Image (cartoon, rainbow, N blue to C red; front, side, top):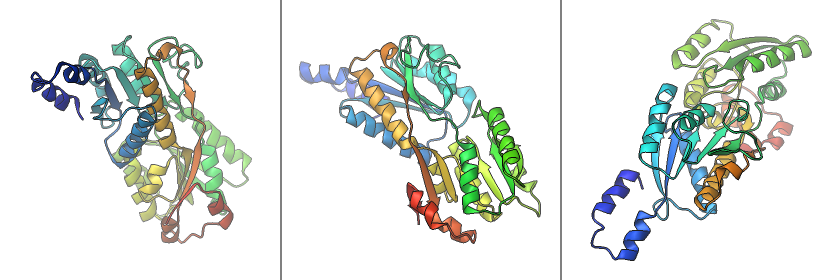
Length: 326
């Protein structure tokens, strides 16, 4: 139930019994601030978040209401959206899509509890004082460290002869792009004969330009670092049309038609975020609620994409996959 529907219901509730009106008015409201677009991937994560809420005893439309805001990748809109949720007097704000929405939310309120999901160190960027004891109105779920080099190793296990590897990094949506670039260059030194070329791209146009730069000699493989999931369809389509085996940061890209992914199990992380919000709604103080460090990675392989690329996935790699899309 959206907040405006909830308010409309209140307008017709004057004749209800006093107890019923009191129960309706007391329904808590969650402000859900998503930096990205409300696409299939974000819907999947929202389902996981709702499951965590349900595990904590809260069901949307039953005993909790939502106010949704999506920035569609326009990070400059996050501050205004967070401020609007404050004016709506939400009980908890959930900041989805990295530290940027969480920082935008923290900048507009020091009273409303905020739960974030992010891969960056929340202490280093100023979200919390301490992982174990956040100390303010912000807590959340810390995603595992980036694993771009591990994706490179898995891609070479699938395509052993791959020597020229392109790496796509999204500098806007990752504060770790520079360090990842250095790690990939170090891997090129470690692996004899490996050549790495890093491409910084964030927008759809920049991605198209990067692929156009390949010309008639596309790389043997592509490794994608932290990237906005609303580019998953574009990247999957381009890698297949250019016949480039690619390893992506998450399941969303493989579900969109990509070859393989290795990264954080986002569904589990968002379920944990839902549980965290449930604890706050029950009275937990975010200042004392430790940041949960998610530790689940998942390997997902798309055998349909493998066949389209003329590849045979080694049985040993298939056996290690957490999910195989056929």
